[in-house]
Length: 115
Image (cartoon, rainbow, N blue to C red; front, side, top):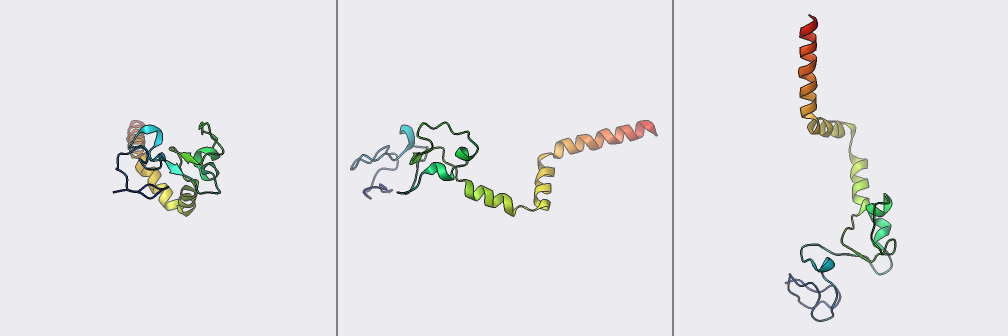
């Protein structure tokens, strides 16, 4: 059984708020959406990818301590820097395989037409 992050009492997994200290456990009353919380001295917006690209419309921005849309930008940046050219090319070919096959068929038709 999960525990409350504030008072550490056992709570029901579907609970929206802690019955002991009334801390919000789920975002906006929906049990399926996780609510991300910042540490005591920092704000979530400092490391959120949506704040960085200026697409965040959260009313508490840039001083949000709780957010349900938070996405950490650090792992994404580290993942991109580790990707080599070969891996990027392979992924691009996989994503565009249909277009590449269509292009190859068109080239074959054009070559057969002119020969």
